Image (cartoon, rainbow, N blue to C red):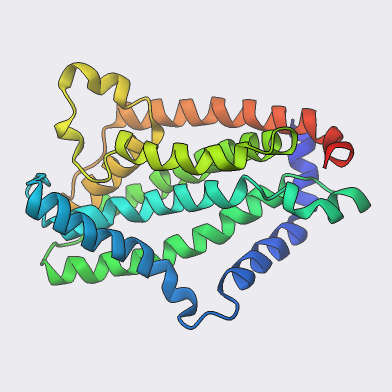
Amino acid sequence: MFAHLKELYWYRDLLISLALRDIKVRYRQTLLGVAWAVLQPLAFMLIFTLVFAKFGQVRSDGTPYPLFSYTGLVPWTLFSTGLTLAVNSVAANMNLVKKIYFPREVFPIGVIIGCLTDFLIASTLIAGLMLWYKVPASLQLLWLPWLLAIEVLFVIAISLMVSAMNVFYRDVKYIVPLVVQLGMFATPVIYPISAVPAHLRSWYLLNPMAVVIDGMRSVVLHAQAPGIGELCQATAIVLVLSIGAYLYFKRVEVKFADLI
């Protein structure tokens, strides 16, 4: 595995080029350009505020619901968009896969890097909402890099698995968006984690995205450190999943050119 990672490092220029290509293609011939990175979570924030906060009376742990929901939607959008785009990344580049050799994992990883750019752009609006609702920043924001690293590694791990599986079973690219949509309700995007019954919370927190979103809300909105036990557990789960996903991808990539 270390040899594969070293080889991936040698092809880092290709990885960066593919990421830049994905970003340019995504916003080419669009009127609003990168503003779409903000508009998607912003639109969902407005809908959720109207439906769940006004009509459904969903609580938000003392935080204004628009800020509460947007803080959860930004990391969730990174996860959902990255996974949805990455699932077909290998199959969509069949011409390159057949012609020359290079690490095939550059395709899904390049997609995630492009989505990470959107995440950083969309995150700027959180600062604006914090100023609007007079929510002060704190030194607890220093936890954000760890939380973001967990999410990025988690998305890459799943993307490696589903992009490889999609080469063999093309209906995977239809299954993934459905599972992602359902997964939002198993993650504290709309509601706070305190709404989950206490006897189910330990199982609920096996979902690394639940730990990430709840941790980001804690440090951004409440100036509190995330639970270190939950953070370490999520880190361990993601590391094990990443190793397994990467080994699986490298084991089956030799068959890609014959199957695509």
